[in-house]
Length: 455
Ligand SMILES: Cc1ncc(COP(=O)(O)O)c(C=O)c1O
Image 1 (cartoon, protein in one colour):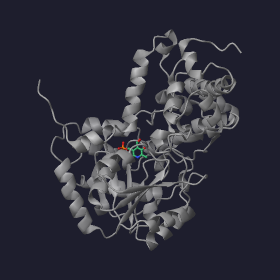
Image 2: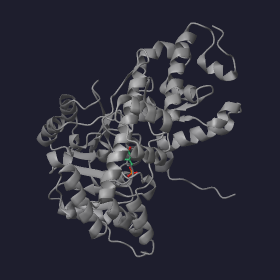
Image 3: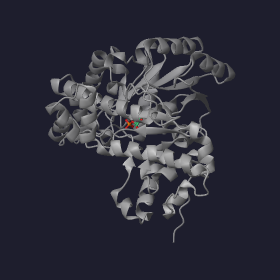
Image 4: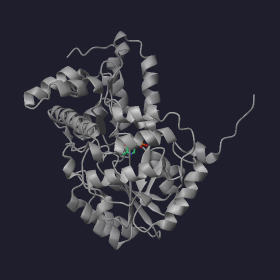
């Protein structure tokens, strides 16, 4: 049999955590023989919008399916114009369409930016699980910057770190609104970060893929507006338009970057020629102003908020547990470190073991543990995504009878997202068992072997 030799550079990188998680869950699923495992699991792990692709986008894709020619490298002009208008209309960030490049996903564009920009990367943590494998693959120098207890970058900490770096260029990855915390930076906070970046000429890649999901949309401010000469803003269809599978993202370059864009174009042309033409036409319908799209954004962000508030309130009822209060996205970050001793008593010595013990019978609950969020392995924080429900049905029911009072909202969740309700109860039960179990000889992992708690 032929032996294939794989390039060492590829051997050295790890599978990005989201794919690893997928494999892990699938393996778990097929391995578990307990009848209850047939049910599957409570899915707090995957960060995918539950809603259907908006009708205008879907229809535009169908109408343009026959467009088989290559598009120009930066994207078709009509789309770049539509994105420019969209950015102005929604985020009051006015950028010439020439500064906008379209690519097959935000992830790809961030990778392309990291490819062409020399420099040391500053990665605030906790972080989305996609950045680090790219940084490693590109063999870039990087430094973590742990955020403060409020979940945000402290400008002083940023400056201290910058002063220790001697590379002639530094690149800060700012993810706002933030995955995993669900937090949104205020204008003032962005201005303070900008002061530091401007002083030390640090570039910013501002990943704003969750901008449109900000519950109070007027609270979102784009870094591109605050620091126009140094920020690359990235965004796309994946989260706001529930179309991750379409693979379409865009980057808005800083001002006065003609030469840089020329170089970027070269890289895109070398790597993938252009983004799929029919998908670009579909995206025009998603970014152009229309009553249908406005309604779609409003309804989906309101439902995210209802689910987020409920998840936040329920988890914070567990003694000792603290979470961020999401203001955007469909995630929050839960801090379970108050249970460290109980974890250890249960032979759960790191966050990987924690997520494994929670996925196993009888809990069947999937979340993303701290090690996948670029935290210390012994940090028992976890990302909880609140998207495990039928988004189409939830939208229809929301339109038919919009919940306004607190009790309406609880009713809405119970009817539309029963797995979120039951899954959160399961997390509560897990921590109760963990605590009760800590003194006994039986560890929580042994429950899987069918040894019920007798105490
Ligand atoms: C913070 C963040 N950036 C980027 C992406 C990827 O976006 P895209 O699907 O456009 O590549 C994700 C997807 O999970 C994300 O959470």
